[in-house]
Length: 196
Ligand SMILES: C[S@@+](CC[C@H](N)C(=O)[O-])C[C@H]1O[C@@H](n2cnc3c(N)ncnc32)[C@H](O)[C@@H]1O
View 1 (cartoon, rainbow, N blue to C red):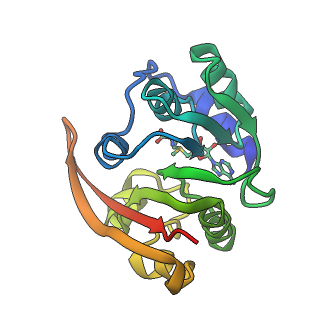
View 2: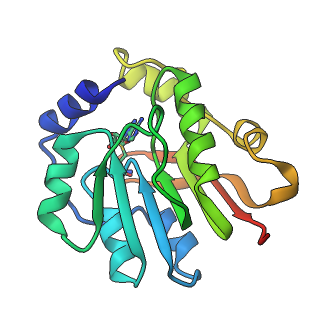
């Protein structure tokens, strides 16, 4: 699942841009004091733009230039960067690092991205990773038979990437999200890095 895969996905996507941020981002970040933020796999940019509107200094990173070209049309306030974070280093440290629904294969690369983005959280900062819960695997396999299924992660995987003495895990749970036509299950992981 490389840049070409994601570019094709965005080109084929005929849905109109909603501009709405992910609800879990809104719920988990609204109480935090704004600082610097990195939106990993920012796609067309709605989350990054929402953060910027609340006083965060935001960098949005994505491997897809098609997605980023669209994001740039919606905001010049966010710094948009074209990077593959499974292969390239994260440029800096941030008070908030958020990754919303960033799943891909090979799984080792996805976990490498998780490791790198956790490292990019500044002391005292917050890591927020939201993904489709592993129990979505069956629906995913039925709806998207062409896309690999081994793209899920849960609490054990994410916790194992963090040095225990540096982090406080605040949330590691499955949440339901009701869409008009079906119920979705999300996995929400939020951890704060202890101050040095
Ligand atoms: C399912 S989309 C989610 C987009 C957005 N976060 C949202 O919630 O709407 C996953 C995004 O991750 C990006 N992505 C996948 N692998 C990546 C990587 N290695 N480095 C940076 N971005 C990546 C894709 O291009 C895509 O925009």
